[in-house]
Length: 400
Image (cartoon, rainbow, N blue to C red):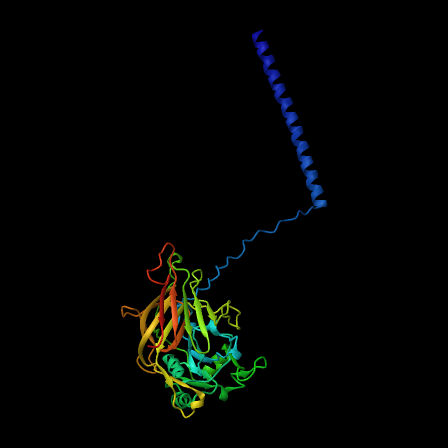
């Protein structure tokens, strides 16, 4: 009985195994047919799937080479930072008219140094010295005087004028090929480097510009090169150390010039006669306002050149004398010294040491000993005026 039951179970297991194998075989056969059919269909009608283009990394570009920042150096006549090329430009001195018929003049604000001194008949004349900055229009150009030639000779400058006194013309004829200066007489170069303009009446109508001045310098051999500074410069004083209310006034027989110190800009805006508005450079439309004002007092006498009706003057500008030096709103009494025609005009403070100016433009106001001037320094916040009959520090001079 037990054997029969075991045999029956064994038969059942074998049967189940056979049945399962048959089913598996059927499934396998069906899968194979389906796969074959699918392959057959693909072969008959192939489907091409789009293939994405491979993504390429952009080519590596080297970083751009940075443009080097030009190294700046102090300009020899102003102390302002400029390029080495600008610092080496040959100085150019231009005589500029100060007659009322010549106003408004052009070129002041591009000049490094401006000289202002009597010329004849009590009428002053300017000499604008350009160096690191190439100006726009300049003029009107007027005639030469000996002492201006000697101030221009301090820089071996190209000296631009239109005629001149016999004394100055003789000097330029003998020493105007680089010995003192490079002579550039407008009578010779008119129409090429200096020009008559229709907007002004003669003789106040001879003009030029920086581009023509640079070409004229090259034409006569005034080459660019290293310049040795004659003065020392420093940055502007901090605002809290700048006074308010200061002024400087110098009086010529023809006009009075007043500087009114502006602490905001640390400059000395310039006023002519009783004008309530400051002098303006017609070239750029901006106020004429130097950083430094220097009064040089020296002896002037009549020039005995055979033309007494011209009332020409000569100056004792070689030697030494009294100077009043204004910078950063403060004025000190010192001295000036010039050893020879080609030597620089040096400036010394009350202690006898070289003075330090503020970097920027300097106006040199040259006064005969007989001409009056007045200086009134301003006051710092909270500062009391000095004791005395005046409420401000004053300095004045009149002939003794």
